[in-house]
Image 1 (spheres, rainbow over the protein chains, first blue to last red):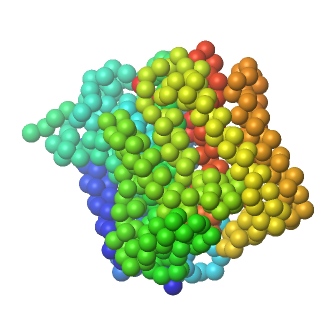
Image 2 (tube, rainbow over the protein chains, first blue to last red; image 1 turned 90 degrees about the vertical axis):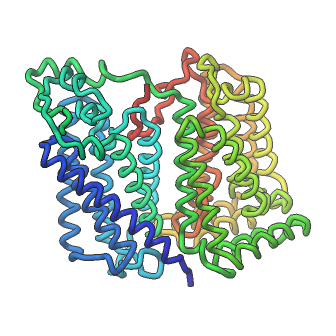
Length: 222
Length: 338
């Protein structure tokens, strides 16, 4: 009989709720200030944070699995379309939306192939078939690599806005004039909360935490 | 009080897009040594998360301490006693020992990411790797005569230490290969020869050339693997049972070719590196079973990917320019670095 200290799952669950709360604030701020880029990542992190908190701590789980599957299917399609659009717009490159598509795919798999309760996350029950451990491992490794390379990247905020988006310069730390001059954008006033929370480093940190937690969940599914 | 921000609208005219196409906008490629450091950091992060698996917190023979006791058996008593002492510590305090184990690996992984903490993290990784090699891998089975490279001998975790040395940050993009930057060309080549000569030796000494031992090595891994890998295992085990000695000799010859290849002209060096990489990729899948990760309960991916990373650090660089574009392995999610 294997045992994992419950505080570990509670810790991951709390961190996931923290990411969800942070994403919600960013999202509200985006709507309020009509910030056009990164909101889809905020939406996905919000849903992922809430659902993964429920995976780590059973009593925090809510919503039917089918609904979550639908949400992550829509997000998967959304980010794949955004990836194609990015390639069309910027030519051959690997769009940052792909990692968010992969994360949505991983979430979808977690709901399609829930693990046995004894092996890991407390809230998931066995539904029958098991996700191929090879796929779990590959997804987890890609997520860990994304976490590491995101942290090491000098393009802070790229996890939310990509490397091509002029919105990189949208945060308070970056030069808005540069972004405006690069692709003809407007400059509008926004609230101070945006400057406080939408810093590229915080956005990257939320992505890194999400990658590590999701990778952990995938490892638990082995 | 308000501040200003940009609101992005569509670029006004198409030519503006072309003007900022990735090709024209891309900064110089990431330094190749840095890319390898980050790949190593990724493996450390994987190890850290593997350390958080439920099995690692489980007391008794079914947990981490049980795994440790398992590697102690067969070793000389002066080795086995130290391993058993450590295993006993872990058995009595699984949470308070395993949690720091995981945290140290998180520290190493994330420490490598920051240039300020890179050197301490690499230094810590060497110390930690040596400790794990002794206490966790039972010295890789070297003292048992069973440290075949097929199974990860002389100990997969030792390659973390070797890589930490060879990827130690140092300027010098004019070196013929990345590993030479940290320790110089001569020392790097000496390390390379020592590693591959050892692999060649371990392939043919002790139980490493025994068909039955090699068969059992694979058969032991079979439990809990997914169906497709179990089927590969069946073939590998059967192959070893019939051609185990020949396979060991071939591995030794390949290792010697790899060792010598570094002294030959660049195209031949590349060919020998490709050979070594291909052989260890096959071993990693068909014999090491990805370090047993897919069956759950593994603490690292074994030697396969690390040997491959090691080989890549010796890849001859075109025009002696150590950039990520020289080796087509920069991960897709890597963001270009200025």
